[in-house]
Length: 280
Ligand code: NAP
Image (cartoon, rainbow, N blue to C red; front, side, top):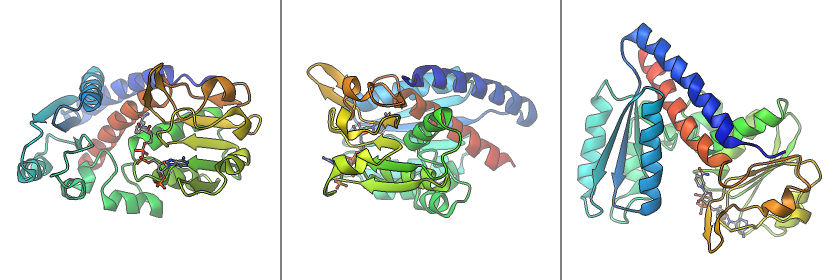
C-alpha cells in the first residue's frame, strides 16, 4: 500500500478549515501565523511560500517577514520579542537553516513556548518527553499521523528510527514511545543498520542519504515512512529505495507526496492549537 500523504493532508486541511470557522464565531478572531525568512535559500523560499499559501487556504491570518541574509541577529531577536507580545499572532516560525552569524539556539529560545509552532523550544521538547501537552515538531507529528492511519494500535510494535536529529529522529522516538512502541534510534555510528532495520515493524528514515534503505533491510509487512528529501540527477528521492522496499513493505510513503504535505498541515494544526490554548 502506498500511503498518499497528499490526500490525507488535503482532508486534514478541510477539517482545519471548518475548525477555524468555528473558532472565528466563538472568539471573533482567527489564528495568525508569522513566518520569518532570512536570506534567499531556494528550498526555504519554496517551503515558506507553501506555508503561506496553505495557511491562507484554511482561513488563518498569515504573514511572511523577509530579511536579507546579512541582517543582524539582534533585528531578528527584537522582532520575535515584538511578535511574542502581539495578541493577534498565535504562532511564530523562523525558517531554518539560518545564516551562520545568527544563533539558531538563541532564536529558538526567544520564541515564547506558547507560540512555538515548530515545537523546537526546550520547554516544548521537555513537555513532549514528559508526556505533557506541547507543540510537537511538524514532520515527526505528520509521520506519526500517517503511521496511525495504517495501524491504530502500536502497542508492543518495534519501531526503528534512522536519524537522531532534534527536528525528526528524537521527537519521533518520543511519539512512538508514548504509544508503547519499543523504539530503537539509530544514527551514523550504529554498527549494523541493516540488521537493526530487519527487526522493525515500523521504520522511519530521516537521514538525508538517497535510497539508503534497501528491500532486504525490511521485514515483510513492515510500515516504512520516508522523511528524506534528496536532490539527485534523477530528481527528488527519499532515504528509502522505493522500488525495492514497496515490494516487501505493508505500507510505504512515496517521495514526494508522502511526509512532505503532512509537515505543512501539522504546522497549521499546531498554530490552531496555540490559538486555542491562548484563548482558553
Ligand atoms: P540531520 O539533522 O542531518 O540528521 C541526519 C541524521 O541521520 C543524523 O542523526 C545522522 O547521524 C544520521 N545519519 C547520517 N548518515 C547515516 C547513515 N549512513 N546511517 C545511519 N544514520 C545516518 O537531518 P534532518 O534534519 O533530520 O533531515 C533528514 C532528512 O529529512 C533530510 O533529507 C531532510 O531534507 C529531510 N526532511 C524532510 C522533511 C519533510 O517535510 N519531508 C522535513 C525535514 C527534513 P549522526 O547524528 O550520528 O550524525
